[in-house]
Length: 336
Image (cartoon, rainbow, N blue to C red; front, side, top):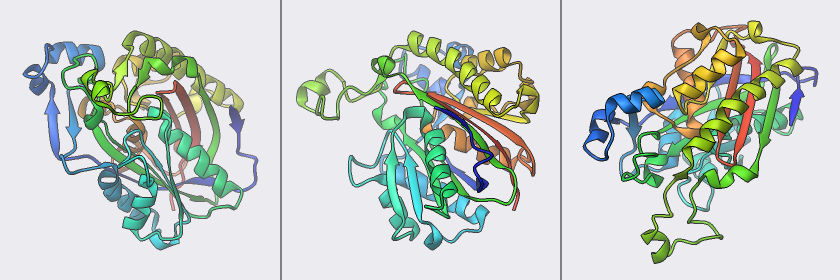
């Protein structure tokens, strides 16, 4: 699914961003004491040096709340004005009620439509597309989207192939009509044939949590790293290329690239093959690891804080995740 949405009438943009990461830092040196690995191996293969880990009592909504409040404050929006809350997460507080509904209640956004969206690491891009559609059609005026993950709670800390990769965190964005600029286009897709390559086998209706499932450790993330890497390196490039072409733009029209932070080698491959200037790439994987749906909004919040986002900045975002899903969005940043 691909579209240049710039001619749809109502301009829609992101008017505020926020982020939150738990206090606990888990370094590669810490992991050396837990599994057979090394700081050098992890850094060379992934670019990750440390990641944040939620406290035992912290759930997805607890991480989402401060990020959401920060985004609302930046946008100058009272939570009571929200009419849509979408939470992208693979680690909800519980199966139901939706973490989105719990977050809306904590914010004081009573009456807002609120739900969860599951698209793996592509969740934030999917959520942004849904919020764009709601605002552009007039169904919503003030939307909040949040990517929040506590992946540490579905990570097998004895599996050195996956435990080195993931971290916890949350990022949020307010989506509203804007007078100029805003979102220019999306490219979204999924290939379910790759679903088994990145999954949590147990916990759904296919395989409920049972004593047998626990013995098999099926409640944890399972990943075919080689296949996911192969898919991601290809689709990160083609998704961005197709979107830019649909928007009548090229890599020279990208001022800031905010990719999903899954693996630095994947990002480097995308940057090289797209022909992007490495100086225009947002990288924070060394400090957070892979935070799934929280990855891109955390990056946007850091970019805004560091002065990398200003009026007219042309931003490209791309992600690949479980599903296997993918998505890219191209937009012009608007201030005020």
